[in-house]
Amino acid sequence: MNGDSSMSADVVRHLNDTQEDALADLFDFLRIPSVSADSAFRADMQRCARFVAESMQRAGLTTEIVPTPGHPIVLGERCEDPQLPTVLIYGHYDVQPPDPLDEWTSAPFDPVIRDEKIYARGATDDKGQLYTHLRSLQAWMTVAGKLPVNVRFLVEGEEEVGSDHLDRFLEEHRDRLQADVAVISDTSQYGDGIPAITYGLRGIVAAEVHLRGPSQDLHSGIYGGSIANPATALARLCGGLLDADGRVRIPGFYDDVLPVSDAERAAFAELPFSEAEFLKETGCQDVWGEAGWSTLERRWIRPTCDINGMVSGYTGEGPKTIIPAWARAKITCRLVPGQQPDRILDALEQFLKDRCPPGLTLTFTRYHGCPAFVLDPTGPWVTAACRAVEEAFGTPPVFIREGGSIPVVMSFRQILDVDTLLLGWGRNSDNLHSPDEHLHVVDFHRGTTASALLWERLRLTADSAS
Ligand code: BES
Ligand code: ZN
Image 1 (tube, rainbow, N blue to C red):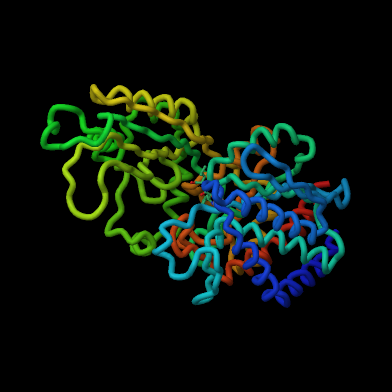
Image 2 (cartoon, rainbow, N blue to C red; image 1 turned 90 degrees about the horizontal axis):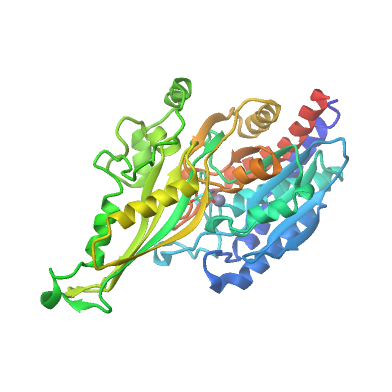
């Protein structure tokens, strides 16, 4: 049964005819400063949740805004016909803090188009990408009056801070969230104009370490050398996390890492990769990482440990001779399949405590964690996604893993028993989490088209299986 293929052509035509409207609506979404990490933006988070719910309603979905102890979750659903496949779409409406503000060319919450790119915090991560699905469903409703699949749509506001309240929500609403397959657009293309299906993500654990020394800052001439300096001690502790070859020195860190097949490593080596382009993207002079692994492998299949920030002592203008009273660092480890978040956090805490010099008090705070994800990249849903992406981008997608983390993906598998198609329309060079975040206008439109075609392809897949 292929009766609706002309219908999907009509939907794509409608999307092409209404591109300006789509951009105007996306801009309204981007104007809401939905920064989940900062409690000053709590009211904006509520406003943003309402914006998402209204967009879903325009796509014919019934919606509910569900409060959590953190930020609300927006749920939408439309059951078109119990015979049709059911797709669970996920996105996040929260964004990273826009800091450092003075490094933005234009204000982060005042979206503008420059050089055919949409500039705003959240343009690619994830509002712009999430919006492609909202838009494509709206287009199906406008043109066809119905959707090709049943849809459950879950949009959360805490992805950037670790999705702390999501698992509980999934457990409580397990029945309402049953689906044949999940779809998330929160990853990237492999390269400019090279779309990707991402079949693996790294996991993550996050923690903070606080070293407390003297009861207040002290004169470093009077006391220096006779008591431990928290800043120096923290630098030594953090510096000791990696050896000179880039290997993590936490005992047991690699114990549970599952091997990666030679065939998979060979497939990575086949992907076009330009180190020069990569260096340009990062602004670094050279690459660096664990000895014995390529840059793609270091990013996709090797675990790491990174300091995300350190503060201590005097950082203002000119010198100041003190021993600071305290020092703090934020640390994350990226995990690969086999590694368990809790075990890694235990080992990290022990590593730091074992090396803390006498006279200092070490406090270790645990934040979020999620394990790594790998999907078998064969099967009918993946094939359907490939077709939709190829049709929209004019070139078939490559199969890749990614180094970033999306906690919900493992939760979907573990709690709902549903696997996820990770289809990213943006680019890693879009400055996600950085100043001047953007999304290429062409990627937004191609993503919207791919999304519209995907629903039809998933329906056809289910048809041919029955
Ligand atoms: N969209 C990113 C994850 C991503 C980006 C995956 C690019 C692959 C390619 C997501 O919003 C994100 O940044 N996640 C956080 C999760 C963390 C806070 C638990 C991350 O990876 O740091
Ligand atoms: Zn994201």
